[in-house]
Length: 264
Picture: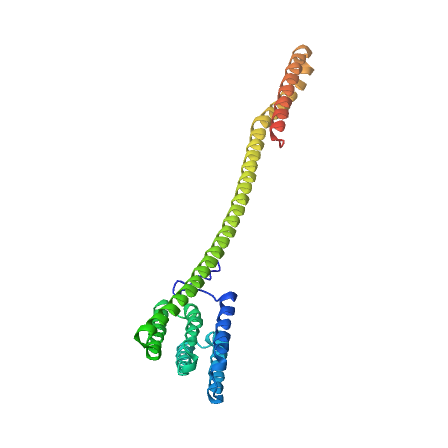
């Protein structure tokens, strides 16, 4: 049984829709307020940071499959990149959606306890940075809004993955039940064949025991009759009549057994 279910993680595999959504978020961060960054220096740094974030994001699955501990370095670098993007004052709070893209990967790559740690770090960085940039009133409100959006998207991803896993498991279970039913049908057929074979052997034994004795008696009676005919023809004719009755009886019993032996 090939299970994709992994109880130690929130979700078992990334989905195409979630991957596309993550790249859309990265592109949205790149496009929003691009014209507000008047300084070529700021624009260059912005492109470099977002480009590095996108490259790391795209190569994460390939490297993590080969280096198990890579995720620690990966998520640390991505958090640093997001916090550097927050330095651009003109960029406001759009960088926050990148934590949602990272949240999708955390749910797939990290065990549950570790994932909660990363989620906590993302939330703390988001709240602190937005409070510094927008104050103690606007900052928490913005952080709450992005946090709710992230929880909604990531929760949907987790539930969708669980639904797919349950569907895959049910399909495997149905296949196993069908295989078990097929084997039971084969066993039933074999049982019927064995019962028929046993019945056949019983009939053969009955034919041999019952009819065989009568055939032997016929042979003995025929020999006796031959001897009697030479000495007493009248008595011999009586024995011939009895021999004929015995023969007819034996033939009738043989026909009855053979009829029972025939299939159907």
